[in-house]
Image 1: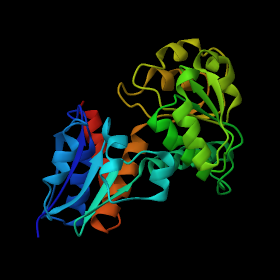
Image 2: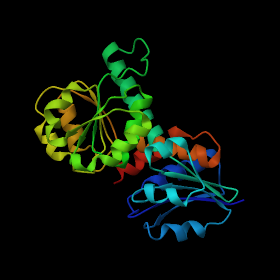
Image 3: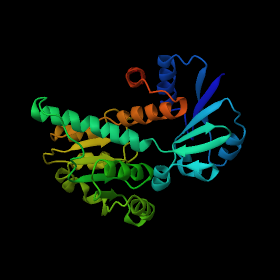
Length: 288
């Protein structure tokens, strides 16, 4: 039977999800699976969901739909409930089950960076044991920051520092932290430049260019690992500044790759062909 899946959001033209999922279908030999992109607003989301028939296997959701979809689902995984965001909907037997694979993507991307960092320091010697995080920082306090708190918890850090543009707008993230049993300390973003070198891991969840000012302020040597989830422009100003200061980075598209791989597994029931998806993603980014 023909099966359909899609990514929904507004706007959606920039999404690389079709590249990733189509590459996975091709590698898995799923010739009767189709993945499309649809520009869907919050107001239009209920009607879109109601029109789906039993050929639909799943949906990927980007902004601004990750919170709006929750009330339209039959079930939500405990992790997605804790984080308060759903980026994946699996459609089966007429039901809608919401999941969050952003956390998986963040954990996998950070593990890649931490292992690479360890290899560089040990010459490829002893294996790198996780979790080993001592101090971690999160830049931003939005939906991706919520997923980042869950990812850091999985890696063993339950007391991260969150640098927010406005402390008055951190109440939702504080509620997420309470559900996750994580105890973040909230600090204004203006104070981040001098403090970041003290952290082992930094995850920037800020929108593209929002960290450019911070990048310009970095003036001291750093040793930690930076994951900037933004990947346009590529590399970001923050990533470039971090490398110049001596730190290690992991590119934001690694999170994108791994969250999509987990979506493929949930929707198809098959292990995702990460290498094939990675190749397609690199080609798509190089062509931009």
